[in-house]
Each structure stands twice: as C-alpha cells, then as structure tokens.
Length: 164
Image (cartoon, rainbow, N blue to C red; front, side, top):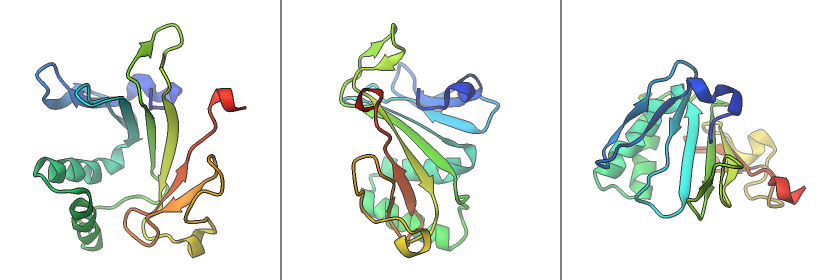
C-alpha cells in the first residue's frame, strides 16, 4: 500500500516471517522495494523506496540491530556517505504509509487512519539551495528536513481525501 498503485505488482517486499525474522517476502522486478509493516509494533507502518536506496536503508537496519541509537546511526551513516560508501541519488523517493491503528479494511483496501507521506532525498541540500523552509508552513506544505546533511530531504504530507 505504500507503493504507487501501478508499481505494486512488481515490487520486492521485505519484512517479517511468522518466526519474526527479517526476510524477503516477495522478489520483485521493478525499481521499488517495499518494507512491510512490523506486526510486533503498535500501529501500522509500511514504506516503499527506490532500490538504489537499499544499501543505505540496509545499513541503518544493521546498525539498529547492533543496538545503535538514532543519533549514532545518523552520525555513522553521515561519515560513511562522506567517505563515498553510499550514493543516495538526488531525488530518490521514499513513500511511507502509516497510522496509529493496524486494522486493514478489505472493502476499502486501506488501513484505518493510515496516511501517505513522501520523502524526496536531496543529500547536502539546504533551505538556501532549495528555497524550501526548514519547517512546514502548514500541515500539507513541503519543507526540508535535516538540511545540510547526508539525509537532507523534502518532506511532503499530502492532505487526505477527507481533507479536500
């Protein structure tokens, strides 16, 4: 559900098996990788990202599995980006479908109260280089998060259908 609808059938899906192990659930043949919801966490969160982001994403998961905290992971990956270990393509996009509940409604093909938001990576970009503010002007306005860092990205939180 995090993937663009036209691309869903060809996505690689990674997530958790019945034993709670992180595995490939489905091989894919297009440009997207979907990270399935972790059934052991509250609420719902699935993500979809361009396959070129996988080394960067996998490194974050590995550091978290080692017990590293958020800031440690950020700092380590920043140094690794500066050293050329990762190449985040400017404009690579992460789609996130998440919400406080985990109830899937087969009639609507949606998760109750879940919303989409998007991250467009622009490593090292700043408010000055993009013209975007560093905080949202309104709930659905784009803004730049982590400016000047390896994780600089545009945050986009569209209005929900009910908000129109």
